[in-house]
Image (cartoon, rainbow, N blue to C red; front, side):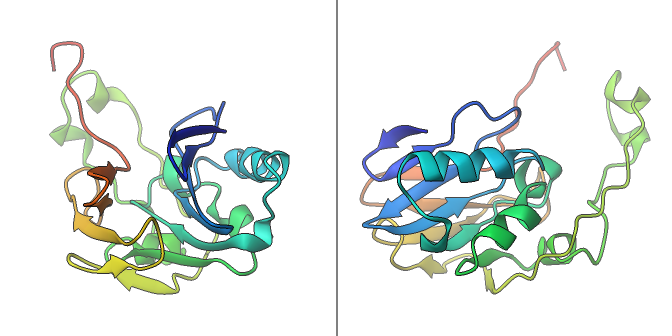
Length: 179
């Protein structure tokens, strides 16, 4: 685990993606859950840092793609005091009521349109709190503002801390291979 700014950490050596930890004096918040195998790494790094899973009060989800909620079911099972917080649009995927929405191959540029896209359905995890634009998650880094950032996923959200001028994003898009 590596500290980014005071009280904000990123978990180390995850295969894919980023998962964050906010420590507000022992009151812990995790942002995203990584792919399925990441849950064990996250829990091991919490333990190695002297933090207990029971101190995790919130798991914030930026969007419901496999590299952000794949480890959520196992992480929630190990953090009994945590409530899952997400947007309304991502809720049905997180709760296992629908598969991850995927674009139609014909809408994608080559070579991406040649790759078969799997139907992914997650093990159900209840979303305890729905958030939307303008909502503030109190008690986390002095208050995190919810900012909708749809596009990559319909209900993708980011978390902004204005005093620190800090924004935590799930995914950002980039161009590569001339596309």
